[in-house]
Image 1 (cartoon, rainbow, N blue to C red):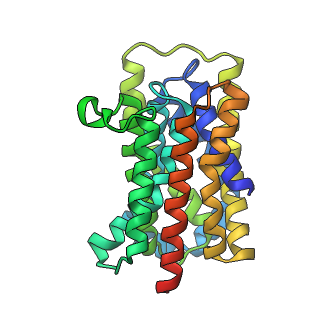
Image 2 (cartoon, one colour; image 1 turned 90 degrees about the horizontal axis):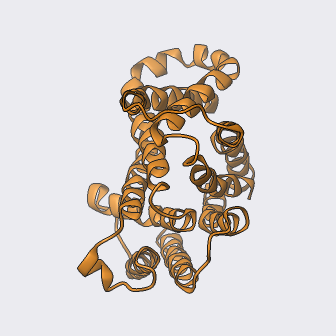
Length: 286
């Protein structure tokens, strides 16, 4: 439960960061610091995995660049235009996006319960992003922040889908290469942002937010989730990811005083119901 709690807190931290940091700059600094922090622990395993790292460098770089970097660049950008509650709930669309990728790319069979789950999840996201008026989507579309966040979810779903091609390397080697790849990907965006001349030295809150995202969502959560998978197995551990939108919403209300509206509750219930149906259908098909 610690991993989804910390991931839910990442949306709140990103919202707090908008007052002190530009979105691309904080993402780049985050992954730079994570790369430095992880290096002493990863250098030994990387030496042992060097042959596999060289052989699969493109796959590993793509996972870090388009999963970790693109997702976080877009999420922190989205939080300048929408609420942390919306961002938390929208992240729950990722399991359905992964299911669609498996269907269209790998031609995996989809059961009718999974289709119902997909429809419920999409309806929940639509209810959330349109403030309880889904018909507005057809006349007004989505606001900028929600549209950006849904694009971020597409990137992270692609990252999760791509993990099937992860080489058999030590998890610490994997984490360091992913972090380094994410940092490399963010550099051009951060440099572009800095050239706009809008950067100002963050205050105390900004540095505390940065410290949080480096230590907890980046490192501690990954360690916790890896240990949870080891103890529970991937299927049971994966169910806990459904807690991310719940924890994120609760933290946004408690720490940011964001208003939790009726449509947030309805959207969250629809999303979780959709995910539950899809997972049960997947278990039966397995």
